[in-house]
Image (tube, rainbow, N blue to C red; front, top):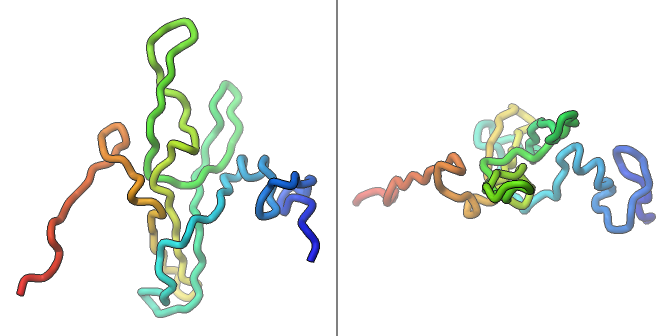
Amino acid sequence: MTATTSCRICKNELETWERAGICGGCRDKLGIVDMPPARRPATPCTKCGGAKLVRVIPRDHTVTPGQVGEPRAVPMLLTIVPVTDSGFFSSREHVVSPDPSTWRGSLEVYVCRSCGFVEWYCSDPERIPIGPEYMTEEIDVGDTTPYR
């Protein structure tokens, strides 16, 4: 078995540290991240019982900051943690552009190959912060065990 020497997408030569046969430039522009551990149990489709599912990390489309923004894709997420920094000419704080390290609530989708049913899961629900600055709220429905 030979090692991959060129990117699967752009065909440029890979550095030794680049993973999955995809270069850093393609990963950045296309929003390609390493797949987290699967959140959904390996069971058939809940609608039709189909045995073949496709697991997908959905991506959103955006533009890089700046006067001449470049289109790119990023993994779809539920929220970000705001980060502030002081200005160069002022001590006043301002919000900086979101960084991947501040993302919370990574989404993954499972699609049934037979019927097309889609199930959404969050791969890191325990990391989602709560508050208006995150546009999140926690809802506690209490004890859901049936009364006897």
